[in-house]
Amino acid sequence: MTWMMLPLALILAISSSALAEPAPSVLVTTAPVKSGSIERSITAYGTVQAGPGASDTLAVAYAGIVKRVDVVPGASVHRGQAIALIGTAPSAQSTYVQAEAALRAAKQTLAHTRGLVASHLATRMQLGQAEQAATSALSARNALRREGADRATAPIVAPYDGIVAAIAVAPGAQLLPGAAIATVLRGDALVATVGLDPFQAGQVRASDKVAVIPVAGNGRGTLRGVVLAVSTMVNPQSGLVDATIKLPPAHVLVGEQVTARIDIGSARGIIVPRDAALPDGHGYTLWQVKSGHATPVPVDVRASAGNSSVVSGRIDPALPIVTTGNYQLTPGIAVRVQR
Image (cartoon, rainbow, N blue to C red):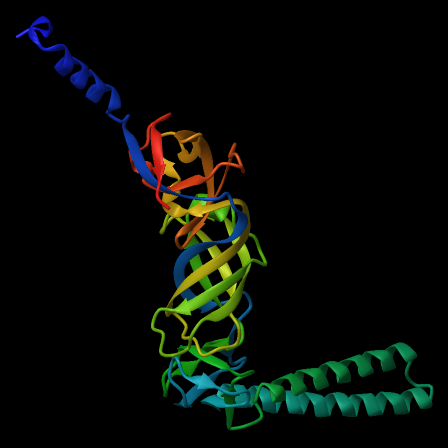
């Protein structure tokens, strides 16, 4: 059947129906342009360790024998608390006896020299030498006494409140001068070492504030720390850049795992729902409505938090932003705004 065979009235009805068919459109919701800022943060993971200068190795300066060990690794200790009891070796006691004898002899020589000088039978130089010898003998004797060589036994005590990180001896062990007894960590000088992606490391600065959350929790909540330093090299074991975070005095355990949320400042721009800016393969596209049609706007996403993002670009502040329905949009397509 051809158009020539149809009645004129039917042809006009079909033509009117075709002309009345609406153009394709997309139902969207919009929001006005709103400026604002979002706090930016980086999340990293690491462990609690001793900070710089936070540990001391306790040792004996003379030969000895371990009589007993009073603590175990990981124990908390207070300043002055005994960690071990060391017995003075016979050789060390002999050294102290010799030092006492040397001091007595030096004092006698000094007194005798002073008498000779008074009788003009010795020179001032000889007196000075005698005085120097007596001073050296006194210093040597006092040093041995401070080290405990004058006693049969001497305790090794904690120099401050802290944590016993290691015990290097066992009861009955014979010690040489300078042998390590224990390693103690300052309880108020612990740090968290976390790993950062190399790109993230460039955004973190010393003094940035950090929220540190122990993975184990145990009701301790969030600890407030601060970035001490960011390494300038990649850790060969982890492939990440180490950042050191100073921790507040708190009940944390050396070696326990933590999550660190580092505050790296705020980003200002246009606040939009996170899904309003769509990735397009090259960047992000935001859609605005102009005269009832969709207009694409290339944007940069500067930061995201929760359900919001901060974007920047050539956004017209007078045009509404499409917040939902943007996945169906093409440039110039008609839109219907849901009220």
